[in-house]
Length: 181
Image (cartoon, rainbow, N blue to C red; front, side, top):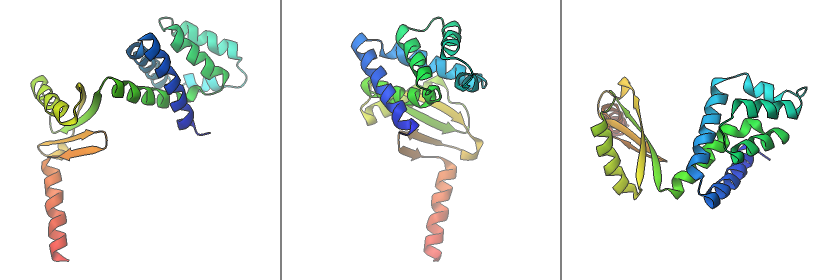
């Protein structure tokens, strides 16, 4: 079975647990912290996957490292150790994040601009797209990319709104090549 399918099943189980206990946001937040710790410490995965290390040593390392985690998160990590699936954490977090956002009617957006946008500009974009996508909130990540020249490129899910100067220039170029052929 592929890791993506396994990660999705674990995420679905965690989602059900969090939904029943009304701790969805806390579960997600704690798993994002775990994911960040694993991403920052490259030696952690190889250590936790090493066949010569006992599962008990691996679990005790997790307990010592993540002392402030809820029992549900810690139990899940220990289960992943037992089943040799610890490397699915990034995919698990991604699936869990998607499910929590769907439940909370939140969408995630990436806004690419030539400069960092002000809070006021980000708030205006959020208000506009909340109505357009019928969501309670839009989480916006602002990426700065000078190659857009001007304007904005906005990605929400699989939808891209390209109002950048570079995007307009590319469309003009495509139209001109169509006319010349």
